[in-house]
Length: 67
Image 1: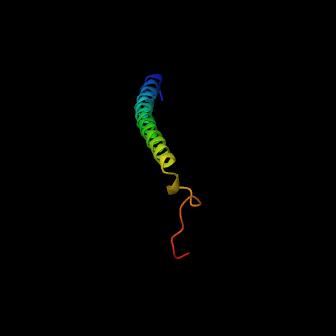
Image 2 (image 1 turned 60 degrees about the vertical axis):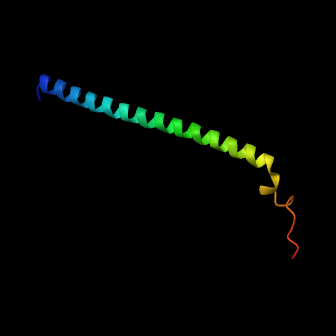
Image 3 (image 1 turned 90 degrees about the vertical axis):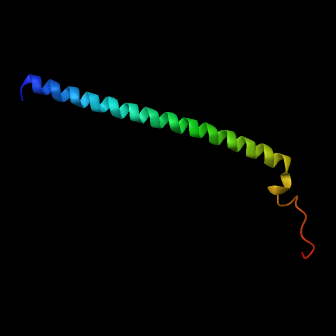
């Protein structure tokens, strides 16, 4: 393999790696946005549950009359 073909091969590999790096970056960005959205949802759910403790705390709930 001569020097020119080695350089061409290295350039092709470099371009493929750049494409993969860009794809990974986009996936990571999308996951970060999704994670932030889920954090907001969890925070809203926590706030809602704190306002209605009977939904979570079984001991605070009244037992039905048949018990």
